[in-house]
Image (cartoon, rainbow, N blue to C red; front, side, top):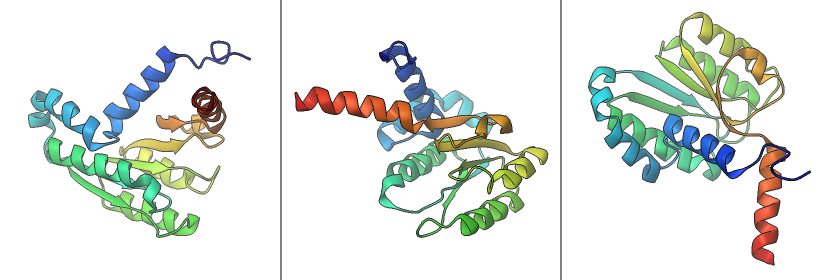
Amino acid sequence: ETLEESGLNRRNLLKVGGASAVLLGASSVIGTPFAAAATKTAAVQRGKKVTCVIHDLNPFFVPLERGFREFGKSMGWKVNYVGPTGQDIQKTVELQAAAIAAKPNGVIFTRIDDKAFDANIKKAQSLGIKVVLTNVGSKGYEDLSVPLVGQDFVPAGKIAGIQGATYAK
């Protein structure tokens, strides 16, 4: 199967990458130009509250945290970035519930388990809290009617393999 046949082409990757950058401000480098472009909207949006609950506070997610905080600062939003030290599904569920109880305008969750986080996602939705998933698309997330900013491991692995082979050549 070629990249084109699998739907993985430059255009689709740029669309996904652009959406990811805009929604999460995935790094301070991306977040800063976005903030400048959003100045007009920012005046109307000031004071919103968003919490990101990640499943594991580890160095892999530092760019996400930094971009998220920079985005909040540039938009005048109150942002909270939390997660357990070390992957812990039960603690993540508890942190999600606490985030929802704080009644933010929106939450960003990772969903690394096919079921454990769904009750919190549905509760947030029922309360009118916007929910965005990030990281990877775990099985069944589409049924929750929430957007995902992230990747699917298999297509991402194909791209990584092709890039690795290209540079190894």
